[in-house]
Amino acid sequence: MWGRQREAYVMYKRLSSRDFAKIVDMEENSALLQSSMAPETSSPSWRLSFPHVVVATITSFLFGYHIGVVNEPLESISVDLGFSGNALAEGLVVSTCLGGAFVGSLLSGWIADGVGRRRAFQLCALPMIIGASMSASTKNLAGMLLGRLFVGTGMGLGPPVASLYVTEVSPAFVRGTYGSLIQIATCLGLIGALFIGIPVKEIAGWWRICFWMSTIPAAILFVAVIFCAESPHWLYKKGRTEEAETAFEKLLGASHVKYAMAELSKSDRGGDSDTVKMSELLYGRHFRVVFIGSTLFALQQLSGINAVFYFSSTVFKSAGVPSTLANVFIGIANLTGSVIAMVLMDKLGRRVLLLWSFFGMAISMALQVTAASSYISGSGALYLSVGGMLMFVFTFALGAGPVPGLLLPEIFPSRIRAKAMAVCMSVHWAINFFVGLLFLQLLEQLGRQLLYSIFTTFCLVAVMFVKRNVVETKGKSLQEIEIALLPQD
Image 1 (cartoon, rainbow, N blue to C red):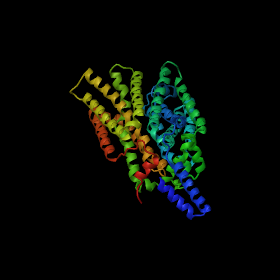
Image 2 (image 1 turned 90 degrees about the horizontal axis):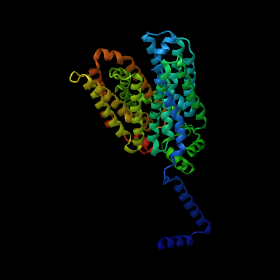
Image 3 (image 1 turned 90 degrees about the vertical axis):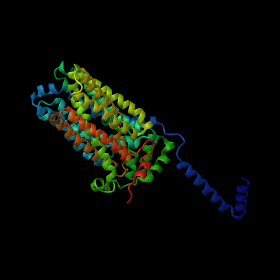
Image 4 (image 1 turned 120 degrees about the vertical axis):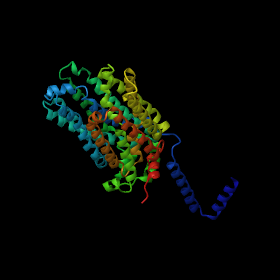
């Protein structure tokens, strides 16, 4: 201590007072700069970003609602609109939504990068309001299909933008928890559609009310997003630095703004988001992360999750359980797994949940295979099949359901994040469509045992794929993840 004081005194004697004052000012400014750039000792409050995340998850609620809204009312719809007994027309009422979703998801990256995340949410809500209104008021099949197409476009646009937005506005220490809210909102949407559809067989025309009801959360989303912060990552890429700082202040608090901006500047570069070409995503320098994302979504669908949903009512009916009650059991299993995933996401990490989720799904599907074999018959096979089905949905909700939508925006570099999500979600919808289209035919030709064995194999392939390719992102900032995975030129 004395040595440093003596050195300072000697320097003071050698320098003029003006020069010495300059040195002191430089040292003070440097200390202030380092202080401002140093991370806060405490994490930002989750309460600031939570309302913004809740608004974003309305898109997921609508997604779940519109997937389930035609399940119970489909028979009444077909009678009222004059296509009862026409299996093709009934299938189109369900699958037209998937076609619209494919288009919406394919365009989502370009829309989110072009107009921003908030306006993208409004562009998601608008076709849902228009489409649901058309479906609710139509007098014929054509009007229903057109309405479902509009709704599907919003369904495809919403989830990728929600995943982007939640990832970009969430503090690192709760990003996994917030990401799980997307899956929970989807479950609540499915359950909401189920309960609203219960009176459909007793009240004539109730199916129209089911569609009208969906316009309420869509309208809330359209208005509420106006008061939400825009993604600071998007603002920074557009060169709107001051607005990015203001957004960070809303989301993290004033004391965390400078550090957040410093972290952002390590990887993001303003003004280059529009230079991303499809070739970079499909076979360029970013191919590997896009391949990982697309494969995760493909394996998610090829695991048989939608096939289980399609076949659940038949299995439960054979056990003497009404279809409505069967859907309740499936919904409870889905919601319970999603809530547990929310609690564990930022404790155990994404990779661990994915591994154990796919492994649990493989075990559950193996139970289905056993139940379909000739070794077990009667009530034992029936209970094993029902138990395996509920276990499959539960383990799916623990990881394979919520993790891909959260993990992919984390591992994609900011420059390609929106467009890469669009490509991966398009793969999701395409495979979802073909699984839904071919499942019943494959079930008839191959039988339950062989078909469920194929699903079991895909689940085990998913375990190996995750183990080899997926990195852990728990607790890391998006910039830390990007720098670690950034492909070299």
